[in-house]
Amino acid sequence: MRRNNDELVATWGNLANRVLAFAYRNWDGRVPEPGALRPEDLEIIATVEAGFGSAGEHLQAVRLRAALGEALRLAAR
Image (cartoon, rainbow, N blue to C red; front, side, top):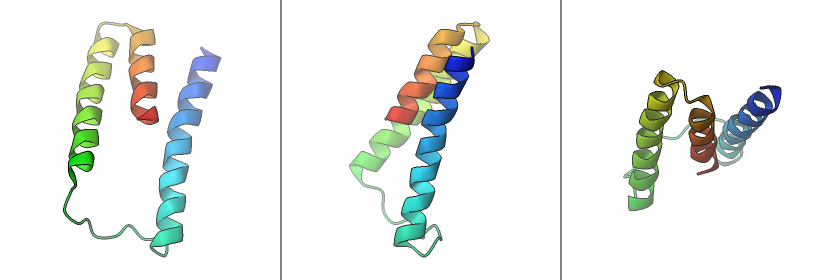
């Protein structure tokens, strides 16, 4: 359990850190106003939304390993 939690926190924490560092470095620490979304942006949004639904279904069915795997897959994406 600890290994899974550590890996999940490290993966999502790394994602959050990278996004914040990128914003700080490129936009003076502020999130810029969004522009038009590119096809790649729409694809990742759809992937993450579907993945959150899938992870939620796994959690409701108490398939914890599958839910964890889905959460890690989304963070890696």
